[in-house]
Length: 262
Image (cartoon, rainbow, N blue to C red; front, side):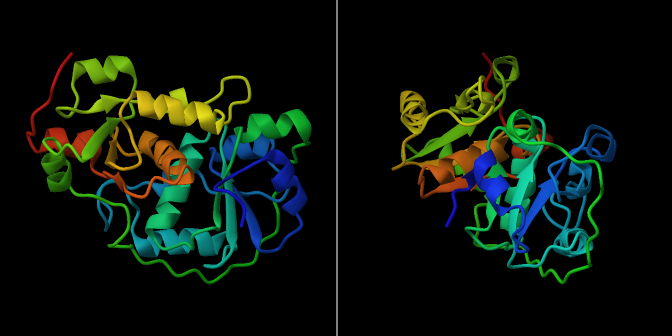
């Protein structure tokens, strides 16, 4: 079973596999004009997000997500490799959405190093692949990683839990959930490769912030996009209890919950 993060070499070796579907989540004009990984289908990121949809936060709803994947020829049991051109943060959100709607474990992968890493070693293409409509079933996993605002509120005074703010320093200082530690999602990346830092370095960085495997980790940002990448990293490292606060700071502030500044 491949890792949740796959290399350019791994993807190149699996491009001919009919059960491996490559998904480009950039805007349609980028997909068409700049080019894309051979055989990749385009699922623009904005189609995966919907404020006020049938499910919580920015989730599009099970029926809408199922229609989206069926439209581009993806079956429920297929493997997905997603990428973008922004260190993987948009692609990560797509993959977490797939997880929340029941796409099987071990079949959701992020291209490490994004499309820029691919371009350094492999060619792009401009032709849009022919796809046949598939059958895709999606159901929101109520037992999955989603956590409610009440869970985050209770974690503030729980020493067995750690609340993690994945935004940048300026945003954090302007106001964060009380007691939250700051871990800008980009600090987990290697700037040279655009992919993940080496595992020992990741573990050291997380330990320095008190983000330990034996604590329950609750992630938030503004609209639950940036936490997607951090969520994938922590799960890749084997963290057993990682909560995904879909409402994030947008819901927290709208509900009049307290903020800590500075």
